[in-house]
Image 1 (spheres, rainbow, N blue to C red):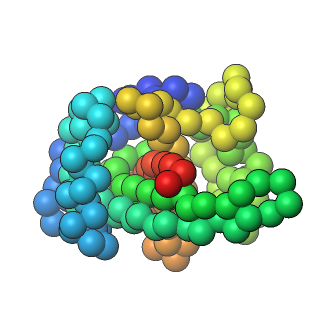
Image 2 (spheres, rainbow, N blue to C red):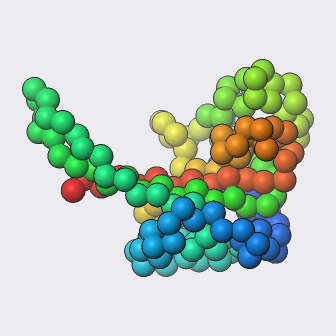
Length: 167
């Protein structure tokens, strides 16, 4: 099934993704996944259901970072939550933002498919797809495991959500 998520166009095999999660558990700590699932907005729950991702089995982490005081600002703490997930399928279109990264000789160089579309960036910074106030980025899973996902047409798409909140 083809999905358009902002500038990303993805062909996702929803059944294969569901099977992937029925056979694999990427959770680092099941309690964190359960805790996160409690605060997910309904739009994110619907998104995961639509693409076949089991939110209780994706890779989720929570860290609290200490921010030291400096001359201009008082420090504090910040909570960082990350959620990383895999989907079975292929990337059909990417934001222009990624062209230089994926064209690097050490990654995919000249091996990118001619059919890959590049979508012009309409906003400054890293493009995101907003789902219920949470920004998702889609990328090639090379960054997750360069050895396992070394080919462009590896059959998987990675997604990431990052949230930060001052405590």
